[in-house]
Image (tube, rainbow, N blue to C red):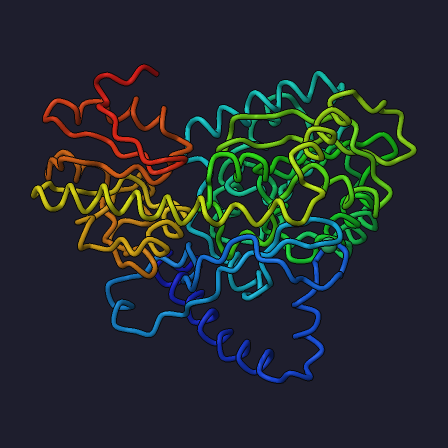
Length: 451
Ligand SMILES: [Zn+2]
């Protein structure tokens, strides 16, 4: 008996609400040990003192609301990002326990066709590079709906997905991808080993940012590896976040924001070495790092030191260089609002395209509600009929754009800009233009946009 998504979501929101009460108690006392711990770096435990960016108070960006929930109290948490003066990890304090965020998740990776294709190409590449075969065992942590591991099945490679959100794990099982509904850490790694499992490859795409206990997580990966086993992790690169002004990728579900310098320090703490790194265009600019045990046969490639050197050159080991980011973010907010206000004053009809998590940081921080956007649309049917957290913008199927024929579409998943322009180019037929908010506000005519 599987609960319907709406029921599951309601359960999850109740958990968040009860957790808010718990948090108040937990952090209410100045003498509480938990409070002190929460004020320290999650990688090296040094006290956190320097602000990277403070985006104010915001609801959980994946807590899409039903119509009935609009009448209820909605929990808001600080979106205040700090940087550690010791190891330079950029991070949010843990305001919300991950089990309240990730046990029910509205994001299904397979809704992005370009992301599924990225995963397919990775699987073919890594199979050849590591010589994986029918004896190999590949694990993916945060395997979502099986968007990646499914590509190993026709190659006869054994796979295990690990995914704490039961609803997306169920979608993976329907694709014949064996999936454990669990959080990953040292305890699970030990249990898997006691069951006779070892990992020739551990894949973690866009999961590292969501890990509250980085040391336990990395210790678990190191423990599960075979002698020459490899870990590949993909995560948005902090350098891109700063250079491209991607402040909307900051949300409560993302506890940490990584440079190669911080990942290198994390790896060394757990007997791992960074032996290769690639720069990818995904999610606004990501790194794919390759890790192995320090005593493994993998030689460290020049790519590693050259990127570490570059990060030092741009000041990633200088605490003062981090404080410049905030002014850029403040400027973008004023700019985007100026555009939207000017369009509304002219009587234009505006709506959003997409309802991604990042969109909710942008909308809440800038205060963009239904006074600007009549509605937004999304390809994910799970979100249809729901409302964005905080700003309460209704979410419709994509076909609503053709019915309402707006003058402007605000593209919230700007990282999928090319894919969206390709799919939605026809809106140009009635003169509709697209607003791309990040890195700086840009208005494009989809008919003229070369893909
Ligand atoms: Zn630190």
